[in-house]
Length: 244
Image (tube, helix red, strand yellow):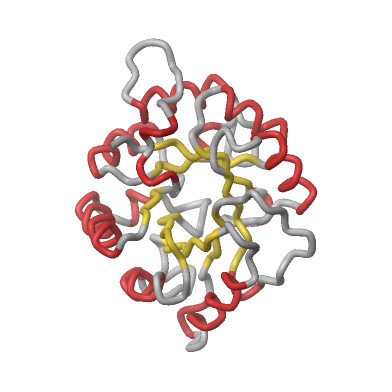
């Protein structure tokens, strides 16, 4: 089965560009609010309505320690991601994550985020998160980086470490998504590991991750992820692994 391309967008305009250029999953986050900054609920509703089920939609909901349930959280969002920065010294983080997941509407599932630079983020160790994810109600794990100014996934982890983690997630029935300031050269190295999704923001933007999504860059990334050497088109949705 094929790996899909997740593109993080901040508004309906970027969502339209990413979708038309071949993204397999539209993810909502505001990069100016941190690695997992949440967009406003009105933006979530606009994007869910626009996408209209053509691909799944996910959202970032910030760090767990800052999380407050959002009034008017829309239905139709498939996944909600919670960061665990600062939770390494919080003994109750598992219970807090379970409680946060329980606030999500029916049909929206939780995603636990592993920070590859987890020590800098004061987050729980990756293996601890893997062991607890299912118990607290998450059905997927995203590997990302916390410090976007310095850390990239493959500067923090080796390919072997990424492979081991993805195998563990697969054995547990959890979906695995790889992110972390990925460049095309990183994606080429990670694709043989067959993550469920490769997730990008900065690589799809003009300038840095705070810039605007560029459809031409999304098309190039989609072609890379989908293995297309010619016309850059999205792979059939039914062929994407597990529909994260």
